[in-house]
Amino acid sequence: MQNLGFIIWLTGLSGAGKSTIASSLAPILQAHGLRVEVLDGDVVRTHLSQGLSFSREDRDINVRRIGWVAALVARHGGVAVAAVISPFRNVREELKSQHPNFIEVYVNTNIDECARRDVKGLYAKAFNGEILNFTGVSDPYEPPLHPDVSVDTEKLSVEEGVGRIVEHLIELGLLNRVAD
Image 1 (cartoon, rainbow, N blue to C red):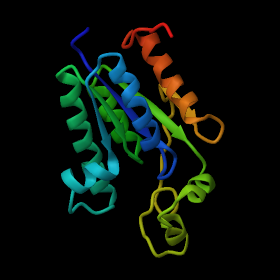
Image 2 (image 1 turned 120 degrees about the vertical axis):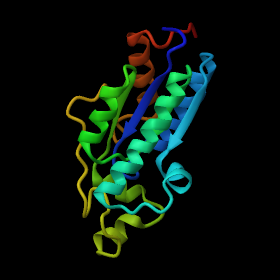
Image 3 (image 1 turned 90 degrees about the horizontal axis):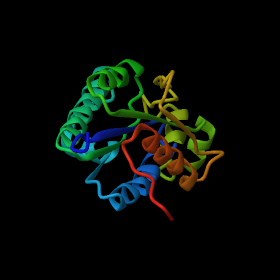
Image 4 (image 1 turned 90 degrees about the vertical axis):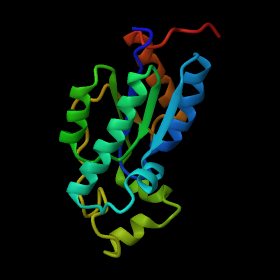
């Protein structure tokens, strides 16, 4: 199993902390000698899914594209850390069923906290009806029913959340415990 990579799929609302956790997790995985690619939903959308709308169909296409890239990274022995809202449960479960080492991490943060953290003012615009199809406001977010790891960023620091993910990877045998 040493050459088999894996996918860490961070899902949650905009502003939940997915990208922050991904950027903190990546160097830890690299320190374990793993090749890591961070697939940030916002960045990938501008390059891989430019022109897609925020309709349900286009969101599903976007998530499947990111899943395909993540699977490619994992198939070649790397680790894909995907930080993607991925609002619809059925598409996440579809991806999980296709990849043996798919770790779903629910970055669980309530909408009020996400709105408080929002430096771009997107939540305010969505609450005022200026942005349509905004996940969690005017479009649904379906939380995972059985995530592999749940990180509540209101109660846990980034380090504690990353620690939970690392512990899970150790339990699965995907990461070796390193002495401090």
